[in-house]
Image 1 (cartoon, rainbow, N blue to C red):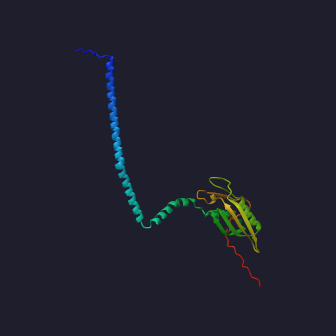
Image 2: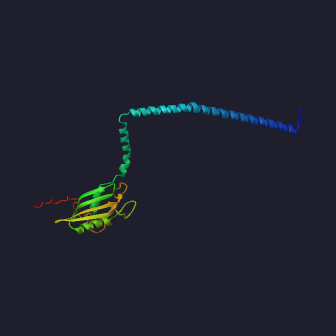
Image 3: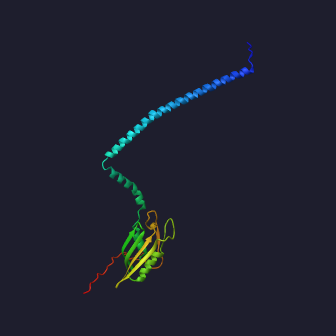
Length: 227
């Protein structure tokens, strides 16, 4: 069978346009319907499921809070726990006080003794009180502190001791001294391994074959009253 299309081109274009229009309208309706359904689902979730979830979390928080409140000595437990958590930092930052004996052995002259030693690890200061055979020995002791240097992993030739102040007192048998100075905090840092370098000014205990004890009790003679 032979068919002939007798419709004009304008009519064909119109039919195609109508078909395209119906497809666009149908697609828009489907997209709009899907958007509305999604909006309804989200609204229902926010109004119902989300509120229920928040209420459940609130109940859990309240329950756990009540359990904590009922715990005996809770404040003490929290305080101890906080102190335990701070121990690693405290241990890391603590000063290695035992090094002071090595340092004093290196810088103290053979002819001098230390009667008392006070260290302030907060102010980085040291105070020495002791005796020596002469003022010259004490002055050399002071100079040794002033001109000493030290090396560590972060720097070389640093100044270990600064602001050295010396006070001298003479007696019949020996000379007494008080030496105050500040020290570099790296000397006692657990993160550092400093090496003290003493200038060749005097013969210190660290340089002798059989060094004597650095620390010696200072005997102060009693005062006698007049008649």
